Image (cartoon, rainbow, N blue to C red; front, side, top):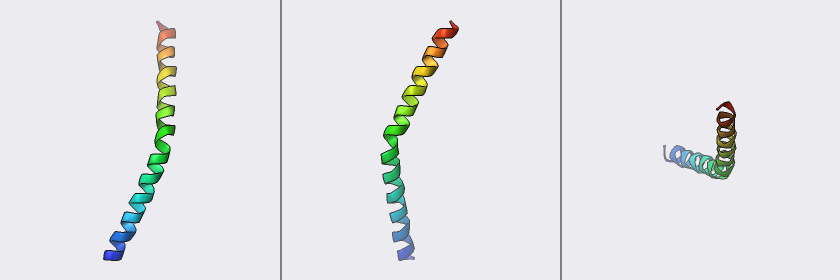
Length: 45
């Protein structure tokens, strides 16, 4: 039981680190998407 909890905590730490590494990429992708959407809407007007 205890070892399973420890393993689970290790997994969550690894996932957290991956998410921390990916956050700038996700933010960059969303900002690019936002700018593209904004220009598309401006074109339609």
